[in-house]
Length: 372
Ligand code: ATP
Ligand code: MG
Picture 1 (spheres, rainbow, N blue to C red):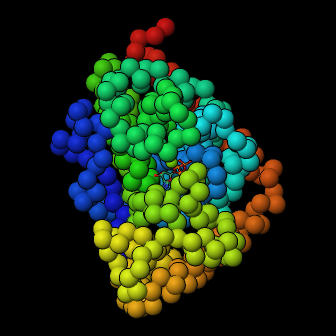
Picture 2: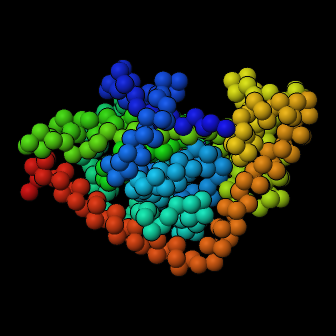
Picture 3: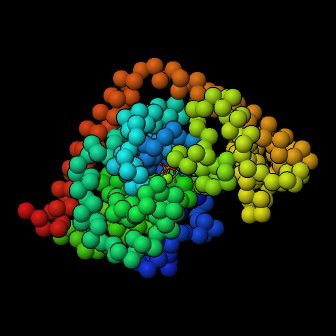
């Protein structure tokens, strides 16, 4: 099937300060083709930064929302930075549980899905002090009202385990600006929930460049673009956004029986006729889409084939499709899991490289700001 990968490069009003926190209109996004051409023509002119919180195992939403695009871009020759934002775990909970284990498992998921660790820079937030220092000047570039307006922050606050909103949660999008801009990435493959955050990054970059240009008029930061894949918002088994920490996800690494059990419990509806109608029947359509993505078919074809089979037939189809698609990835993951030392080596090398780049960017920032 043709995937509907899109580049989010908001123009016009959504690029203004007042709409910093607005969710970009997905229907306005340019197609992937133009980007594909420019990346193929000169992969070295681009850099990707993206990442995942170490809060649990990566799931199917990560795969079809971002991971596939990462692997694809890396294979085209684009340099890849993957941040594991460990400090950001405590935006919505008091303590980060099993941090080291979750961090290693993320590296494992990356390698199993095809990220080439020799060419990628994989690192944790806490290991790169200069990156975190960028947060200070960046925080001065956004208003408190803008921070409060961010719809994704509002959603995460609604799902937070904490009674009161902490300052880290409120400033989360600005940390992400530091994550992306420290290495001057211009492409950010993410799910739809990240679009408001990308807007903040773009605003921070623009305001910084306007306030602090180099003496020759050149600027420090690029204005990165979000890159969406075919499932920018995959739903979980409860019908809400599939999330690592909401108990509704199907992990990439789940075994086949667990996958079957989780999918069996997925929310559907009572209409036996299976159709693909994301607006009218979001849960059923989500399962249809999942099967289609795994089988490289269109959702309409999948729905048509199941016809009047009802939710049970739909779930059987999705379970087979998911297990089939992820079998080689899961096998590779099991092999890689035997060598935990290698995972740590990947992080060690990544953090060394990320530190060198963050130090250089921080030095440039201090210079244009006139620091001694
Ligand atoms: P948590 O519950 O801890 O916030 P999460 O599942 O939301 O976990 P993140 O680490 O917050 O995962 O997000 C990592 C990346 O995966 C982001 O680019 C995000 O947009 C993308 N992503 C997460 N969930 C989905 C989903 N359900 N569909 C598509 N993309 C997703
Ligand atoms: Mg999240």
